[in-house]
Length: 480
Image 1 (spheres, helix red, strand yellow):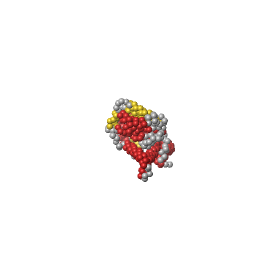
Image 2 (cartoon, rainbow, N blue to C red; image 1 turned 90 degrees about the vertical axis):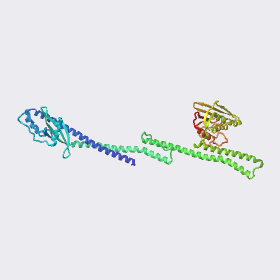
Image 3 (tube, rainbow, N blue to C red; image 1 turned 90 degrees about the horizontal axis):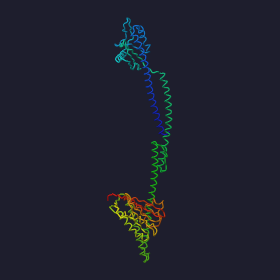
Image 4 (spheres, rainbow, N blue to C red; image 1 turned 135 degrees about the horizontal axis):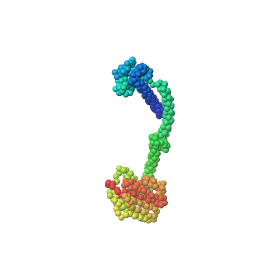
């Protein structure tokens, strides 16, 4: 038996004992109360009968002898101590007009006299309970006796009250059996409930232990509406979040390793070419007529290396939220037109036609002119780079409600569905076509858009081209 089961068992036992005591106390109180009420009613009924008979005798001279005889057997009639008391507290003497008198030899004590005085004052039936010398309960009942409509005496009956032991112990026996059965049932229920209560806790504890070991696939699989069910669901949610965090950590670790590997690869190639060329020139191994070619190759690799380093620094700055970019009021369509003019020269060399449809108006926007131009140039440059000679690129700009929409669509090789989610990662290339580049362009573009609150959407199909859409907030109230 585990600790919680033991505790529950002790709690149930303690509660059962307390309830038993309360039930016994309540039962004894109720039994005594109703027994007392019953006894009191009997005494009242006897007092009423005695009163009625005494009034009959007192109001009739012929009943004087009968009155005397009746008074002498009051104790036997009432089955208790009975007193016939006058207003001054003495035993009653019949004051009737007949020559004979009736004298009561039984004198009341002080307690009875005081009680009789209370009955005279109230003028009606009166009862009270007092404690006897031995600690037992004593019942006093009194009723006024009237002679010719005037209260002349009081019948006081005094009796001790004792519970009927036979009935009491019989009731206690039945009650004890019922309480014992209830106790046994409660113990059985406590064990069943403890087991039912402990089962989900064990499963939760096991799941938490598995999570602590790194098994984030563990689940409680508890479906319960109670607080334990809520705890189980929260544990399962924690499991899912830990699994997601673990996958994200693995992904970031993989990205970091790939990033380092890509940087190493991108840096190694130009550095190796530069070193080989410099060593060949330094050692005089290059013929005079090829020196110029080596110098041109070194210049090309230096430019490529510089571009890679600049892109890495640019991306690092854009990813840092503390790095502030300079913003001013600009015409967004002018920025787009500037980017298109820059790309037309490159597109013209490959007979690629750029179709641009833009409204003749100003689109006021708060942003960094140079970086927004760079954002459009990156997408246009990729569109040219990944398109075949003689194809087309379409640019469309339009305003809808409170947003500007700019789309750039090409007829290039497109991007497969499974690769689209990674297209904005650093150094990632879709592999659709062999091209020169650092693999950082789209990552830079995405961060420029993010810093300006611009949403970028990609629609692409392998072999049919790609479309980049920019959703730009028309109301841009950012401070410069």
